[in-house]
Image (tube, rainbow, N blue to C red; front, side, top):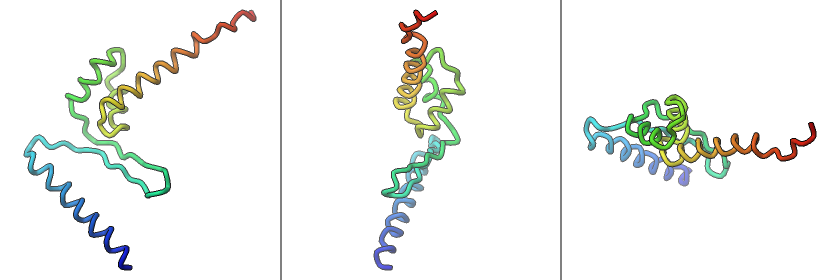
Length: 110
């Protein structure tokens, strides 16, 4: 049981430090997602952030001009408000979709 009490103590310290951080920022605090996962299982579940700041959406829209706002917000939530990762994910999906129709030089069989 002694080994189980140490992680709980660390978790309490972590939770208290997380709670203290937004209050020090005042009214500019923002809600963030939480990553939940068991160590060693290799599976991580991301709980999306309920609020996506407008400046993050704007940053992504500058690069992803043809993408819908809702798609950008959804990807920002999936990536826990990581703009670079969200943009890279959406751009890589475009690349994958764009290669499928173009990659067919074997279309001479008609």
